[in-house]
Image 1 (cartoon, protein in one colour):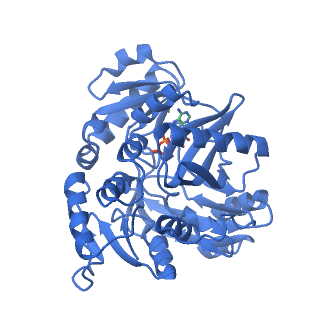
Image 2 (image 1 turned 90 degrees about the vertical axis):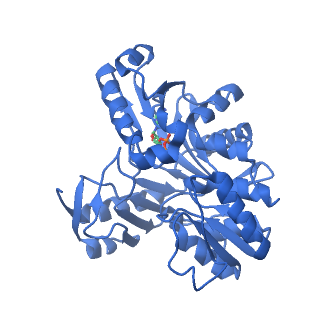
Image 3 (image 1 turned 180 degrees about the vertical axis):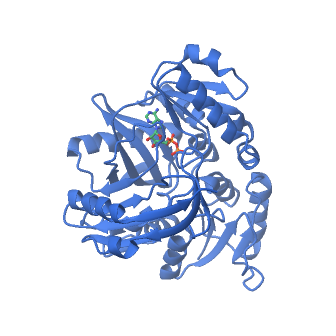
Length: 411
Ligand code: ADP
């Protein structure tokens, strides 16, 4: 058996998927947007693809598969889910339809489909980057959220409470969308801006796996830090959720309805929802697994990783159990406090000594530039914890973070 992993060169997800393949004894091809150092020495194990030309990239994959037959194609990040669906379709492998994945990748299309299907989702309107924000503001009700159609990790997502904030948010987002690599990656979508009603409430993330359109929930994560804006930097994720079981069931039903409305039927999904007095609202869903290094919080059955579960599922291999290991677990995506050059990180040992803390990973090398949201794209790092209760996990993450000090010097 051989699997093709499609991943951007800068992905966080490579090692977890490669390790899963190694454990299963499955051959791997890594398809990426930049040539890899080892490609010369390992023919058939790497593939350079033009992620900006999906037809061409699909053709390259089909050619490879003639010599090195593929059993599954896995799109690891947002950048590669559409290509994975196209390649799987061309190779007649089980997959989500290309339209369903494209719809999930375009926040405007997603909202249109959800509105039509009656799935609770914020009211929205589409603007152009050429619009005059002062004029557009007349049609907007506040508070609202201004966002790009196709970026991820909350990049460019900004809350505005009044006209003045709206104009500023609009202009700030236009500047991001005009960055050459963003404009190239987004095409027409980089010329558009989505404005949504701000949905108050508690946010959760749902990790699931679809089989013939049926959603199996693998984990629901609480996000105990309020995400009220103006920017929406992810911080703490803790599972299992402390919400009442009935609310968790409503969340699962809402995610399931969303997948159905889009036509997503196979493989992993990661959804973000908000819960308030009116019940759960879908913020977004993506046909991929959780991002960053966050999957390290999840273990199934006798210790198998999320990636191994996904890979077994994609290859039609046996899966003993989908039950998450019971011990509560959590992660903090370390927020970037200010822009500059990361000069030094202090207190890592002290942070790792906090009871319940398993690991502190600093993922940006010293000497590199760090940029906070809404422009930034990377986290400083990740803190992982496991403990007796979700409360203790959350407490451990906060205490470990308090012990860390980031010396960031202005550029
Ligand atoms: P991305 O794909 O970049 O993560 P999202 O659309 O999921 O973009 O938005 C990122 C975060 O911004 C969400 O997780 C949520 O916290 C917040 N957010 C986005 N849209 C809304 C909304 N309409 N109401 C409230 N919060 C929102």
